[in-house]
Image 1: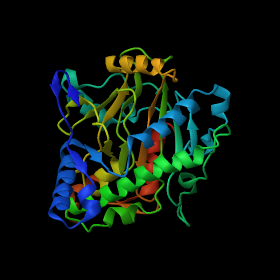
Image 2: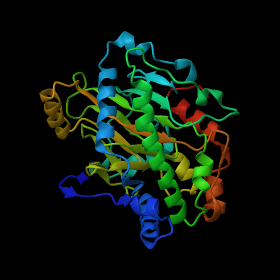
Image 3: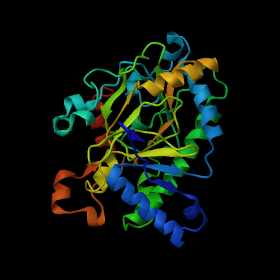
Image 4: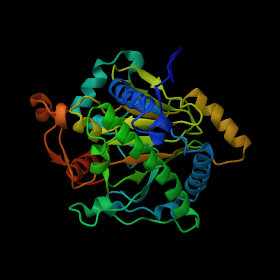
Length: 355
């Protein structure tokens, strides 16, 4: 990762030792490294030996072709009646919540000029597609957050490609959750049990760089994610800025063969603020233009895709600080709330759903 002229690399957590023997000294060291990284940076780089760059490439190719379709073909896949929680979300629909969140605006005010985000008070020009990963709950108070999938007509390989990439991301998250629980001194399966049957969403974004390809264009305004953990494969187009807990702005640069993981609001809730949800934005930077030239040379669509999965706590579970994270102060700041209610409130903030 880079900040101005300063090179910075997020800690890389290797799942290999834990997959081989979760109780080995090497595995336990990675657990501690993972929990420390999230507390310090709200993000980490992740190496899962089961996930190959070729898997990411197949997924990115299909999503580029999907978003490059004519407008009418894509709009058939939109489901506004369920808050766009399945199917496609058109550009200029999602609004970064920071512009309407006093606490967030105060955070921005305190930042040094070089760390401030770009403009975030308008709707994002990115598209998105939501695809459910994993088994839905058999019974839930939040059916709209657990809706059936939308399958685009022109892509016979859609289900297998989405499920293939999404399941790999989900499986990586499941192992990391066990490692983080261990690193935090919690029971190993506490997070995975809470996330079972959660509304996990494979959520690739698509930004049309032939239309929004000028340096300084904001593709996704300054925000945090509402879910538990977010995981991304490597994008073909640089432009993701993330903020460390200390408020330093960094351009994300993921090592080859690695994935990027960021903490979301549900993680912040369960740890009583010990881990903060990580702020980030996606903008067009000079390196984006270089990638556009490479994409043109390959005769591929100029759509910037993020291969993102939102890993969620299940809708009917209660969010409250866990174990040693539960202090008088943290319980006051993070009061008990049903996860589904927390999601609905956040979706209202970003203009996807009425509470």
